[in-house]
Length: 95
Image 1 (cartoon, rainbow, N blue to C red):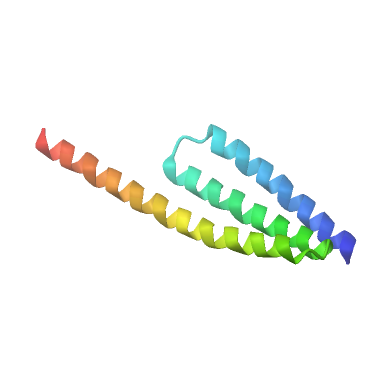
Image 2: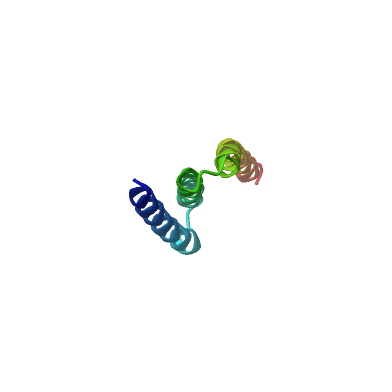
């Protein structure tokens, strides 16, 4: 069972590497948000798996805290994006 969990963690870390490449080379804000969410979700999943394999509850606690922070970061990004679009629309109408 331990080797299966470690294999799953390695596959998740590989998907995180793909997400990092996508963040660097993608132009759109929405694509970057989705890649960042994939990155954080994968990191949290890998931390949870490593915490369970090594029987360290502190790692699991940190992963769960990061999951909550990731949700707030996504909401903050969407809010900032909407504010920027409204500001740009106001500037277009005023000119």
